[in-house]
Picture 1: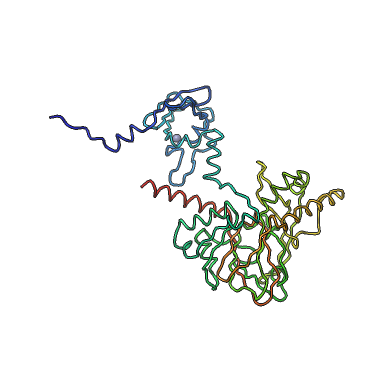
Picture 2: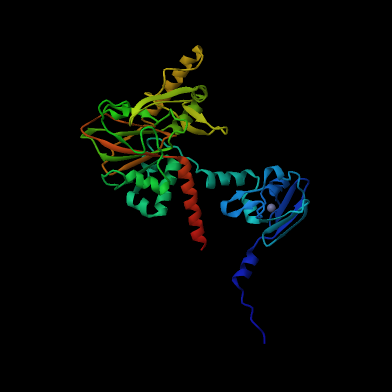
Length: 402
Ligand SMILES: [Zn+2]
């Protein structure tokens, strides 16, 4: 009897699978997909180093376990074949490796693949903003949603990564709400001001933030090598009058300076400034010092961190005499822009609201106020925020596949 062929899911997958061929060049294994002309190349040494067999790689810890002192840097494939999107390599040292081709294609040595990794796995691209754009870029979240829903937690952290600022409302007026948010991410960043700090007028304080006088635009703790990445400021009690919050995106300010006056930009980038703080907190004296420019760039020319704090800039200034005026001239340009209407935003927080922002990128300040005002603050670190973003995104794609 004629048996009707009913396609099964596996057959379908096989039909839609890409057909790959493999070739060897002098030092690369070259993969080619049937529909494309271009080859994807992987150096022998990289493949041997990234072998996924249990002798070379510990799956559970996602860690390479090849002993470097026994590693064969000169291994050469003797046989290669590719079937069902699996590349198999036999090496001249009697080792055998199997690679998933889709896994390899993500790791290919092209600008496009590496850019894709940088933006989608490593860190989100930041988008700079002006005061005019601020109302549109400011995303608002509800406290209980972040606590209850991973999708909301992810959106909040993505907003922080991309725009450097996000607002959370309906957090109530009791203490400890920032800790609950921090625990959704990882844990609090501790500093000399404690795990949690209360910004309110304090008699005999050793920090100007604890006065009711205006607080100039600044980044927190520029005197730390490991400066906290993100501030969470929970408004518990707002003063009777004044106390407006003030923000500016220094990455946008720096970009304008770079485009309009590169000389000034390079002075801000290349001059080390000494940031310092002497304080007495919780029964101890502290004297913290960090030595870094106002604008810190990485080796790709991307800005990584802004340091700015008028009260915590030390009088010790280790530059040649003839450089001093040049630096003050650059400082004047930077200060004028952060306070300019183009970049400077002001708003009044209501009790129960939490302002969260990137302390490596934004400057923040506060207007003078009357009456009792209490803001509870904590810090988070970017290492943990990006880590949470990656884990949440991985969970989502896993759920989608199911
Ligand atoms: Zn191996």
